[in-house]
Length: 58
Image 1: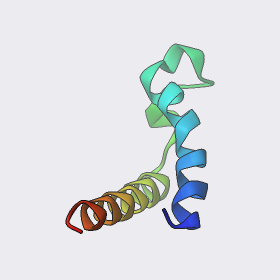
Image 2: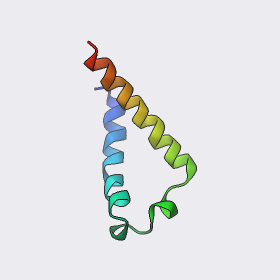
Image 3: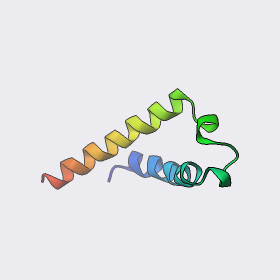
Image 4: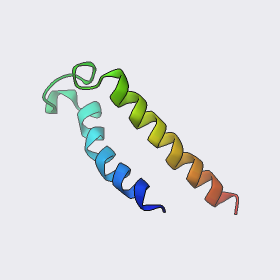
């Protein structure tokens, strides 16, 4: 896996708790995430999925 994905996935992991358990976070998801943050996470996630698909097709 490319190192840039490791970095992104390490940053993404804690976000699971924040979005899954909003009462454990310092606010609700709509208060914590703006459109720029969401788009960055979405684009990086699509990149990871595209890489995974390319590995499966090998």
